[in-house]
Image 1 (tube, rainbow, N blue to C red):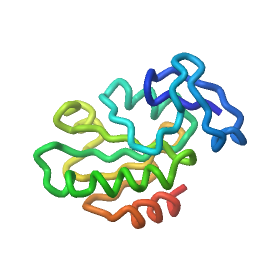
Image 2: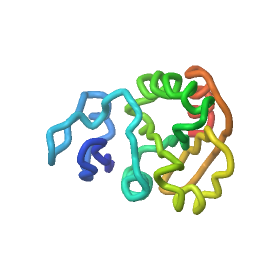
Image 3: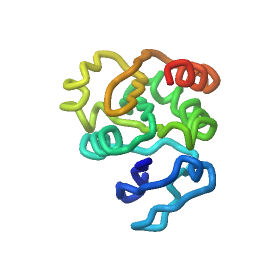
Image 4: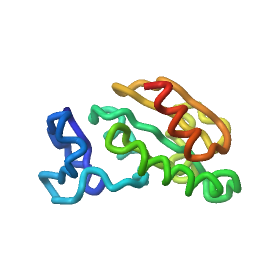
Length: 140
């Protein structure tokens, strides 16, 4: 399977049985799973969504959004529980307004789950970590 490095965005081929064995990037040597969300801009988002084989759960947020800031530690806790099965990422709608428009994001915080490069589910609003995990697993 293909796993995009959260540090350098290099594409790594990895047998599925090695996902949990703390694999490292063949290009930069960084861990492929860090137990925390990856901050992505529009270009990096497209690479992770389109080239990686892992499901991608994205938290679309903005710095001025109180509920977004409240959900950040919950999303980080969910990342620790869901990796290496799912890649969790954060995309700032302030920094990537064209991406937000293209994906028709009208409210934040918004979780969007992608699999195989396609959106499979979305959920708006603040959620605790346990609910993020359960919602994600229900849609895989």
